[in-house]
Length: 352
Image 1 (cartoon, helix red, strand yellow):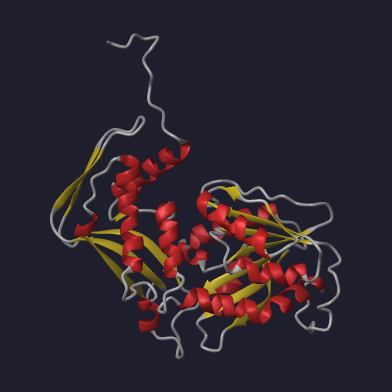
Image 2 (cartoon, helix red, strand yellow):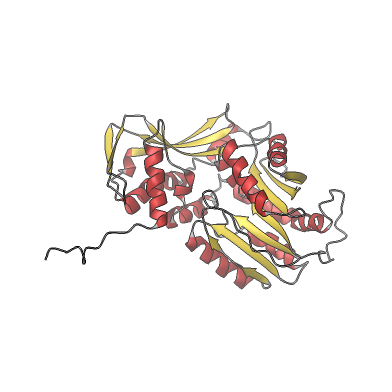
């Protein structure tokens, strides 16, 4: 039966699929070829990243967790005392003047955030926690885990791409917000993009609100380049699978035919830009086809041997660079916590 005009159904494409298709075409037709790092985080990619955070080479997660464990009470004492850096720990048992709500950008499954939430529930009976992430699966897991393990925390998740969408925060009357941007997620963006993200966040905050920023530190006398590179090129190959998953995602969601096994994972330290770069390197001359999608025409991509798709940057910071970034985006650094090996920094800053 030939469909008539009345019965013909035009295939629709979701907003998320449109965003994936648009970004893939934009990046893969640029020179050099690129893919935005937010494309990593479909359901499979989010699971792989959770595996990465448990690897022995990946010091970032455990170091930041240790900093939270050691300093959570001090962080909330500083907030209670309006960010005064000379406050001691004698006020830990005193309830804050105004309740603090927690907002987290790129929350994932929020495994480290529980340390901060527990510390805050010792100071106030209820805590509003607003995790924002692109993965609904990760947010569902975060909500179930936190509400089960930490009584008094009300979880209000929001599925959103905070990089491309506006940030809307829920605020209880007379409350303050502590925004979390942890895990060195800020390092995944160029200096201009990182600045734009923090400026948009600052626009949603009020004077007296705060930001807790986690950032990976640049190599130093106590942190070798080898330690840094290994965190992005682990012996078990989990990071390689995470990197290649972006190709699998384009195959699954756009009908592309990337042969992922013909692309090698590469992690490179770029000293001039102070960043780790992740690439997918074509191992041979090959062509890849992406079918038409919505109003976008079909696309054929040609790869030369050794040509790469630049999939991620992870910028590394000095303490002075962190302070400068905060000052440039409407924040004043209050206290920075650094581990003994100077691997990682957590900075508390006040919105001014």
